[in-house]
Every structure is written in C-alpha cells, then in structure tokens.
Image (cartoon, rainbow, N blue to C red; front, top):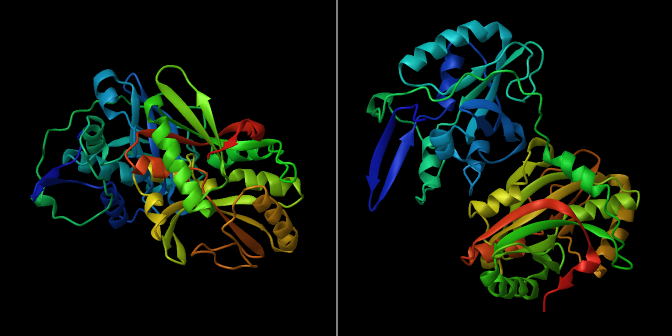
Length: 427
C-alpha cells in the first residue's frame, strides 16, 4: 500500500514522516493544461482486494478542514485489514476533470506510475458514476488513494501519530523509496449502484419525527449515543455533572439517559441540537441545519474556527472533532477552550416568532447561544441572504469533556429518536 517515495526525519525524541501528497498529482495535471477539481475525500470500501464504493465523504467546498484528514480519526480506517485480508476501508480522494482531458491524463498518470507516484484506484468514463460518487455529463471522475494510507496503517497498529495534510513543500530528489510499489488492489469491477447518503438526508428524516413540546416537556427528541466501559460510568457522570453546573450554556439540554448494553459496555444518550430544528418546524418555522462546527471560547469572545456544511458531508463532524482531540470543553469551564456548536438558518420574516419558541425551549432546559439578525455574521459564520442564523451548543459537549479527561468513549451523533420522559437530569 506504500505507493509514494517518503522521507523520515528525527526531531528530538520524535520522528516526522513525509509522504507525497495527492495534491501533487493535481498540480502536475494542471501543468499539462488539464483542470482538475478536488470534489470529495472519504473512505473507500474494499472487498476481496477490490474497491467497491465510497462509504463516507466530505466535500472540499463545504468544510474548513482538510477533508481527508478528518477520516484519520479513531477507528475509521482499516488499512491493515485490507493488506492482510483484502477487506476494509482506506482513505481516498475523488476528483473530476473534463472528458476532453481524459486521454492526456492517462498518459501523465502512467508516467508518474513509473516514478513510483501512483495510487489511482480508477479513472472513470465521461458522465459515469465512479465508486458510487456522481459525475456530471462531460466530466470524468478520478479516485486516488490518500497518501496518508501507510500512516493510517501505523496508527491502526497502535502508534501515537498526528497526521497533517498538505503541510509543506519538499524537493522530490530528497525523498527515499521506502519499498517498491506492488499492486495490491484489483481493478474496480461493475459500478456500484449504492450511493452515499449525505448527513442532512438522515437528519431530515429524524427532524421530521420530532414532536417534543417545550410547554409540557414531553415527546420525542433526537439523541446522540456515547459508549464507554461500565467501570468508567461513575467518573463520566461526575464530569458531565461538573460541565452542567459550571457551564450549562454549553449543553443542548441537561437531560441524559443511561442505556444498558451487553458485556462490559454502557451507553449514555444526550439530546442532539437538531431537536431544536424539529421544534421550530413544528411551529411553522422552516429551520435548516447549515453548519456543524467548533466554537473557540476566549473569555467573552466566541468564534467558529472550524465549519462543515451538513449538505456536504456523510458524517457528523462533531464525532470527528472529538475523536481527533480537537475539543477543549473542559478548558472552557475556566474561561478559554473549544466547544462543539452548530448553526441553522431560518427565514428572516420568522425571526420574531422564533424568538418566542426559543424562549420556551430555554424555559424547558434547552440552551441557545445566539439568535442573530437578518444577514448577520454569527461568530465568524456567514448566514445566507434574507436569513437569520441560530447557534446552538453541541449535545456531545459533556461527552467530549469526558474523553478529554482520559476516559475511553466512542460517540455517535444524530443516532436515533427517544422519548424525553426516559431521560433524567444528572444531580
């Protein structure tokens, strides 16, 4: 799977491994007069050493972070399984070029292959879907293995590694060929008819079923599920209680639920902020989830430092932020940190009515960080024309604090519907 030349540098007691970023191929194609458009980055499912389809993706145009870097979090990849058994998921990029540049691109990629710069999974046909990803008429899709794939394998083996994408420029002749390239994967066969669903599709189907009534505090809400060891439950609940008491405004809601699981695991359900969209829609206010983000807190100052659009991703980025250790919820209790937050948009004409609904939500225990004004930029996030933004804290913030304390916890956002009468306030 190691397809690129690389370089190993020792810095103090640590090592830096440099691999050739796939963006290099973009630059070389461009120099040949072929415009190449980075479209998505994600995970490709491998079966019997054959690439089948993208299972997850993030659109380049819809996020502030390097999309491929997001998929290096936690246990998202299974490169070692692909090497050993031919089954698993590997990181890959999906680009498109004009169909008139296809033959020229094939010749260039063949030259690069002879230089041990490769990793092309497949070049599609004009207007044909590739590995489950849509391609417009007149365009051609190109799927390329991420250059971080060997590093992901090392991470899976238990090594503590921080992965950064497109970090620096290096002279090619200063790189070493660690091992000669051996074609491990087979040519993709019949195009997959399965398509990757964007997160917003799943979210809409849950939002539509929310019937929570803030007046009576009854009805169904959208829940996140976090899984941890039973032996860590008391410690986790203690940390959640501390966050609830010190910074209640950083919670979507103070309601939680303990879920019994088989074996030595237990689940903690927290209320997802998308519940707010369901409540607003039930009141006749069209609320559209727009961004999932990371909000930096410095005393009284707040600004989004990461944003990803709900309609440009198949995964909830709050899960990624937690898994990659990007949150600082516990630090925020003392003034400065980073918390999970999201932004939704409503029509500006519905602002006054939404303020009344928001007030009822607050009285029922829900938290809203801010309701903006027409076209107002909220915490560095741009709102659409004739729209009003509403920012809510993430429902996983208390669980992020639990993970920051060293407790092993696996989080899943936007997971299911639950009746709020099964939840309780931690005291």
